[in-house]
Structure formats: structure tokens, C-alpha cells
Length: 272
Image (cartoon, rainbow, N blue to C red; front, side):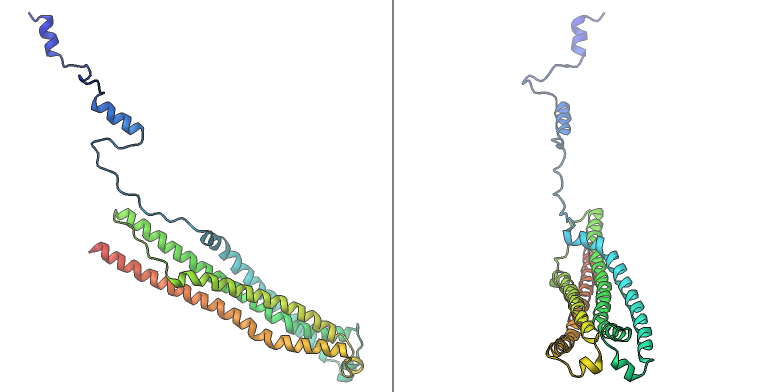
């Protein structure tokens, strides 16, 4: 017959340790509830470097589609205006020269001549603005491609469990957005100047050639000088803006090529 003392000796002791500390299981549960790893688990790996989208990247993601859409619309509108100008020129030059040159200010013929000459001033700047918008959309799209390459490389390295390393942004990546913005500002400025000069040109040509323009007064001569002077430097000014847009695209492509080359080297390094 087993006595009570023997039964108590066979049972495992359930009381706390003599020093009063809770059991190890309770310590692990408390540590887990606090978000800390248990004492017997290895230390967590160091945090991976993270990259947040900058304001410029967010702007590029939102704006590249509107840039391309607006640019294409401007090119189509320019084509329509050019067609109308050609029809107007056909009607104007269908009249004999004596009648055309004798048409007075405010007449239909003088108005047609004024509209044709003013359109010659502002329409090229408008077309350049449309093409610049298209190139700006391409430049923004290249910026998105660069962001995708960076984020994809980071996620791939994290998935493989290796140290995450990202390419240091080269100078081309820092310069091409500013060149694109400067080129767009120049094209917008050229269009605004073209509108002002076109208005001046319309007012000048809305006169009788025989009665007013040939024996030009001081005011008309001043307008003619301003029209020809600004038109001469406005033409290369547009090309400066366009050159900046094309240069920004070239630098963006150079950055993409460098990023692809860097990622290829990184993959070879991980595999080796």
C-alpha cells in the first residue's frame, strides 16, 4: 500500500523556483507578447535598406500619360490649324494683286492676310510645344523605368536573402529631370512670345498695303521692326528648348543602360 508521503514524492514539483522567478516558458510568452524574440532565439537580422518614392517619382508616375496625351492633341490641333491656314491662303491669293493690296483695314481680304501672317508666327511655336510635351512624357516614362529597375532589384535581393545593395544614382540620373524641366519652360516661353508677336503681326497686316504699309508711318515701321527682330531669334530659341528635351532623354537612356549593367554585375556576384 502506497502512503501519502510516497505519492507526494512521485509527483513533480509544480511550485516556482526557490528564487521566486517565473518559469522559462512564461518568460518566453511575455517576451513574445511584447514583440521581442524569446531569449533562446538568435538575434534578428539587421533591417534592410528601404527606399521611398520621392515627390519627383510620384509626379512622373502621374504625369507621363497626360504629357503624351496633351502633346499628341496639340500636334493634331496644329495640323488642323495648318489646314485652315492653307484654305485661307488659297482664298486670299485667288484674288488679283491690285485688289489684295488695296483692301483696307477691317476688310475681309485684309483680315485674311493678317490671319495668315500671324499664324505663321505662333503656329510653329505651338507645334514645338506639342512635340516637347511628347518628349517630356517619354522622359518621365524613362524615369519610371529606372524606378522599376531599382525596386525590382531590391525586392529580388530580399527574396534571395542576401544583403540588399542599390546602385548609387549617377550624375546623369540627377541631371536629366532638370534638363527636361528647363526645356519645357523654354518651349512654353517661346509659345507665349509667339502669341504676343502674332498679335502684333495681325494688327500690322490688317491695313491696306498700298495706302498704309507701303508709305508706312513711324508706328507701323516700329511694329514691323519688332516682328522681324523677334521672329529671327525666336526660331533658334525653340530649337534650344527642343535640344534640351532630347538631351534629357539621352541622359535618361544612359542611366537605364548603367542600371542594367550594374544589376547584371550584381546578379553574377550573388551567383558566385
